Length: 174
Image 1 (spheres, one colour):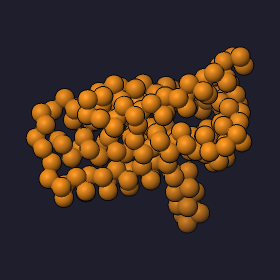
Image 2 (image 1 turned 90 degrees about the horizontal axis):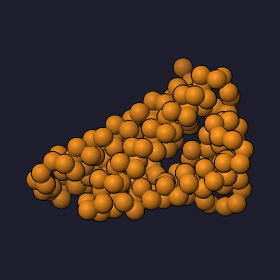
Image 3 (image 1 turned 180 degrees about the horizontal axis):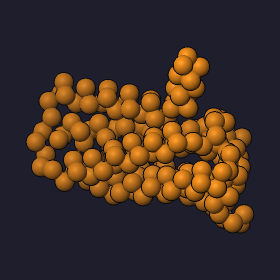
């Protein structure tokens, strides 16, 4: 179970860190994120800015909490709560028929779709597995297993953060 915990922690650290940094890389990136939150029409206008700030702050907090096994439980719980909120919001937007992008990982203009729900359900699964891994006895981990777990985490994070591009690539060749 140690390897599952390592992979889940690192994958979520990388995903949340990349997501936050993509919104903070410049004033324009954060402004575009705020505009995308506004177009989702999930919050009253006066709350759009504060909600965007809280989202980014929590996206920064998750990797900090997951960095230590001592704070991994609150890290996984925070990730789970945020991902559940994101997924719920995406479902509401899709059911309303609103066509907008989320700017989840920066400059993508791809409209929200089912692939975003599926991606988030996969990330939710990582948070749940991570919680289970923290609860399991620490059975230690061999260095080679740690390397493989971290490599798997990088692949999972890459797929999650480039999903829009990967879906577009496969649609072009289908």
